[in-house]
Length: 255
Image 1: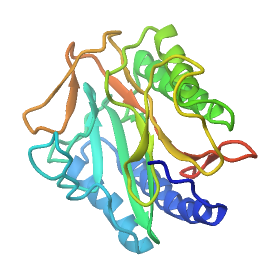
Image 2: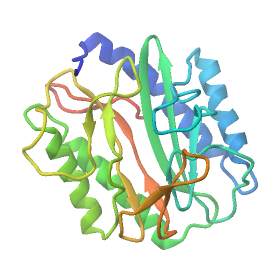
Image 3: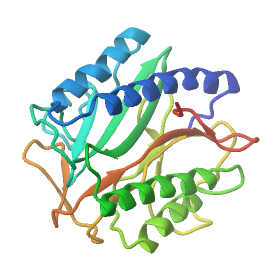
Image 4: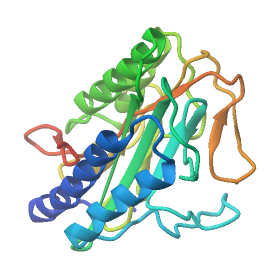
């Protein structure tokens, strides 16, 4: 069931979104060569504490995972697409890091992700990340009253495929509100004009995931959480929490 949020509830979700945005900005600023992924999780966790918010990631245990998620931040490096567990790995020059973070505040959730290069960028990585961000913008632009879920999926998929990138099948965006994951699902590829109609008060986490090698294959790492590309190519992830309103899409996790 899809819960339509009131304008007051959307304003409250914006406050949760601000916490997420601040945490991701802090992670990006702290992510220098030699810093561990565990250190970055502590940086993000401190932002939650300072805001009086809690983590929807920490101890989250979906049916596919062998154990609850042990951190507040997903930190996915290079060929890791999503769900990377922060550990003692220390960032190296040229690493591509995707950071995904959520917050619960005042009974509402926010969820967002960014990808960026640590140290010296490679042109192909810059293009991959720019395309992920462009796909996200395209998805947001399609998130208008009167469109359908398929229009968002088609907008994202078109940008990704036209650039020659792969899209991990079965993983995409989702509804969000009182819980981090709610109905409906928001695929990263689809046919326009299909799926659930978009209505004022729907709130969606829109999140393109791109595989640089151009193929869609991926697998779960031994930790049961991290998803890695089958071909070893790099991946990028971009995400915002977006409210559908009569005045147009409202990004709730913008800084």
